[in-house]
Image (tube, rainbow, N blue to C red; front, side, top):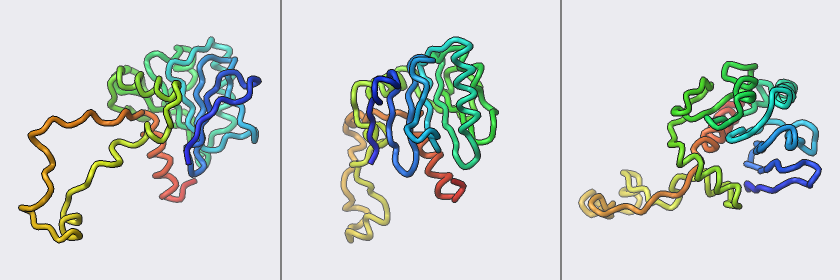
Amino acid sequence: MAACALPPPASAATLVCDLGQGLSYFRVHELPADQPSPPSGRPGPCVLDLRYAKADEIAASALRAWVRFNVSARTPIFVLENAATSPALLASLAGNGPQGLIVIAPASAGLSPDISVRVAGASDQRAYDALEKGAPVQSLLSDNPEKPRVDEAYLDKEHISDGAAPDVAADKPSAPGPLVDTMLQRAVQLHRGLLALKRL
């Protein structure tokens, strides 16, 4: 089960989450105050969230050294960036880095990540803030888990003809979907894909 917590005061304000299946999450607010410090010493596969993070060049260089020491093809680090990430961090952890480093950023941010995600800046900000305010991380990773799926398999299973299928309310206004952290969701999907391919 995914869970988040603030670490002991010695680790400053880094937000740490267990995303399940061996993937951890570190949210950095300002460096060097909250440099990631996993209890085991090595983070393993992880998401390093640098959205809105602040750092000068020296702190950014220290984080880059930490990333290069810990990243590998079998222990990937998924870095989340956006246009509000400190320029020093953007320069030190850009796309096309060492093997296992995967930089993810919004397509609208004008950056050069390894993977661009189509997400509106306002939506990204709301999802980022929601986790900060204590929303369960799992709730930010699911698009619409309770939406009924009406397809051929469902109709066959329920012995329903096409004409008697439940109304999907095409003409009714749909309720707003759940708040999803699209950036974090993409990182988790990539990790699960690598697991499925037995690359981790």
